[in-house]
Image 1 (cartoon, rainbow, N blue to C red):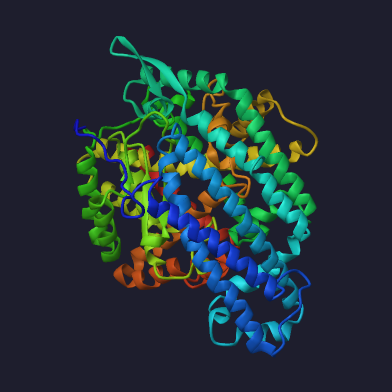
Image 2: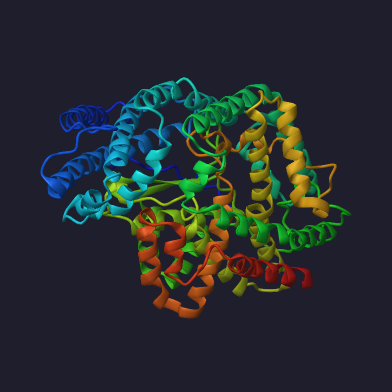
Length: 605
C-alpha cells in the first residue's frame, strides 16, 4: 500500500462547521418548522378521532397535502442535519460538540415523532371511511402522489398506543434506548488494544485490530482475535446493560402497541410477510451443508483439521498484491463504466469530492456504511480501508447504496428510502458485479482461488453468520421478557447460535462469543432484527444479477426505476416487476445455487 494518507470525508458544501452560523440557522429553521406544523395540526384538528374537514374529498386531500408538504420539508432538513453531525461523531466519538448536538437534534426528533403520531392516528380514523379516503387519494396533488405512504400509514396506525403514551415513549427514549445506543457506540469506538508487531507493542484502535483478521500471517490473526476478545471481555458489563435496556424497552412497546411478537414490527418495516421470511430462512438452512464443505476445505488449504474463527477471513490462494486507495479507485471506476453510466458518473463525484472517509483511526466507528445527505443530493461513505480486496469490495458495496440514493434524487422525503430488505439491493448487485469482473480477470488458478474465497467469505457471513445473528436476537427477545440477561447469557446464546449454523464447518473450541458486543445492529431501538434483510438483499441481488446477465444494458432502465421506487411499494410487488416470487422457496434456492456453484468451483481449485 502507498504511504499517502487515506481520505477523510468532506461535508463543507453542506455546512462550514458544527458551530457555524449556517448550521445554527438550519437548526432554527427546523424549530420554526416544527412550531408551524404544530399549529397546522391543531388548527386542522389532526389527531386520532379528530374532526374531518368539511367539503368532502377535495378538502380532505388539501388537509392531507398541507401536512405532507410541511413534513417533507422538515425531513429533508432534519435528515441533513442529523447526517452532518453524525459525520463527525461516527469518525470521532471523542468529539463532545458533536455528541452535544446529536442530543439536541434528538429532542427535535421527539417533537417530529409526536407530530407523526398525531397524523398517523388521524389517517387511521379517516381510513375508516374507506370511500371518502380513497376519493381524497384520487384528487390531484400531494395526497395522490403519496398514496402508498398514506395507505401504509393507515395500516400501521392499528399499532399505536394513545397519543399521550406515544409521546411519553418518544421523550423517554432520550434517556432510554437512544442513551443506551450512544453508550454502546462510545464504548466500542474508544477501545484501544495493546498489540505486539515487529518487536514493539502499540496501542491500536479496535478497528485496526479487527482488520488484522485478513493478515496473511496466521499467528497475527490468532493473536489479534484473542486481543479483540479480551477487549470485549473487559467491557462486557456495560455492553450487556445496553443490550438489556434496549431489548427490554422494545419488548414493552411491542406489547403495549399490540404487536404479536418481536418479529411483527421488523417484518412490517421490511415490507415482507412471514411466508416470505420462512421460505428464505428454510432455503438458507438447507445451504449450510454446502458452506460447511467450503469451511472444511479452507481449513485444509490452511493446513488445519478444523477452521478456527480467526481464520474465517484468512487469505488463501495468491492475489499477489494489496491495493493503494488510488488503485482501488481506478479499478472500481473502470468496472462501473462497463455497468452503468449513472453509477460511473456518481462514483467519479464520490472520489473527486471526497465523499469517502477511509482511514481507520481511534474513535472511529468500525465496519462501513453509507448515509444520504438529501439537502445536497449526495451520499457519504464510511469504511476502514486496509488495502485488501475485502475493502475494495466494501467500497463497491457502499457506493452501491449511494447509487440507490442517486436514483431517488428529486423525490419527496416520504417517497424515498427502502424497506430494510430492499435497502441492500443495489449494494449487493454492484459488489457482485465487481466480484465477477475480478474472477474473469484472474491471472491464474491461485488468484482465482483468492478471489473466490473473498466472495465466499462474504456469502458465508450473509447467509450462515446472519442466520446465527437472527437466532441470537430472537432468543434474546424471548428471554428478555422474563428478566435481564447476563453477559454470560449473551455469550452462551451466541455460541449456541453459531454452533447451530456453522456446525462442523468450524472448530467448536474457537468460536466468537462476543459477536453481540460490537455489532451496532443489535443496539437500535427502532430497528430490530437488522440481520435477515442482509440475506434478503444478497439473494435478491443475485437473482437480479442473473436477469442482468440475460438482458444486458436493457436491464438498467427497469432496474434503476425499481431503485427509484423502493420507498413506495411492498417487496413482493416490486419483485414481481421482474417476475420474481419472493414467497416461493424455489427463488431463494435458485439464488443460493449461484453460491453453491462458486463453492464447487472453489473446491475444484
